[in-house]
Image (cartoon, rainbow, N blue to C red; front, side):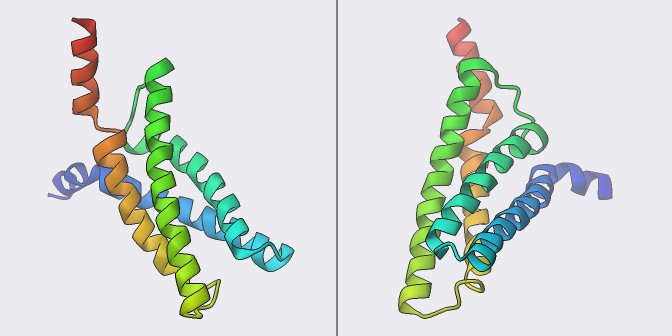
Length: 145
């Protein structure tokens, strides 16, 4: 029964594990830049986002979705991944700016609830649009024919 549960939710559980690690990395880079080096919160968020996206792509590709894309297929996959992350980055930036500038939330505290929303959004984008094996395999078979 546990084995069936683990197999059924394997992608989600691995995504949660590596997403948590990505979130910790994102928060650590942000807090170091913002609190120790006094980098503006939106610039610190941008830098931490870049680091997190690179880490997330590598772990999602290899461990979560077990993508075997190489060459131009990998370039296309990475472009879709980054495009999805750019979309969620926009959502994250707008949420941060609105909550900090207009709602006067603390710059450190606001990041966590926003990252939870963005993590869910990123999973959906990755699962449906980036690492969809069935669609990728079908497209490869059509190109080979």
